[in-house]
Length: 164
Ligand code: S3P
Image: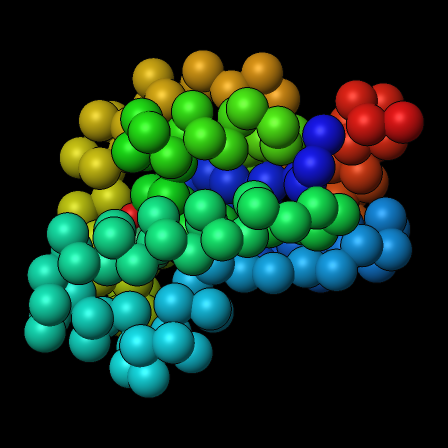
């Protein structure tokens, strides 16, 4: 396995858990949203507003292809990054994908009043469309009733087992 790819819907805790997993595994962490914002020089809501979601998805795919061309990192993706079937197939070829999940009530609490995520206001519809894809990943970790540290330990344990 080249990299550990941490994915999952908005609000499942990727940004909180990612640094803890990186500490546990002593691996560098990269976050696709952070890289996109750095490169675009504007925020994600600004990219969506100025250029549209399709443009954001192109940037996202390009960043992911670049990251998976190297090894040994934890790659935290935006929640929609692996919805593109081509990107999903490219990532699954040589990387371990671990998908964080959370129950709807937990997501509602975490996403309510969120202004930094362009799709947060429609999260229920977006989640319903994507659920089959999130569920298709071989490794899913539910974050609803666990501390970030517990989730990170579970993610790290999956990596250690799958990528000895
Ligand atoms: C998105 C999730 C966001 C970000 C963008 C789109 C999505 O990342 O990439 O707002 O389509 O689910 P987080 O999952 O880190 O919020």
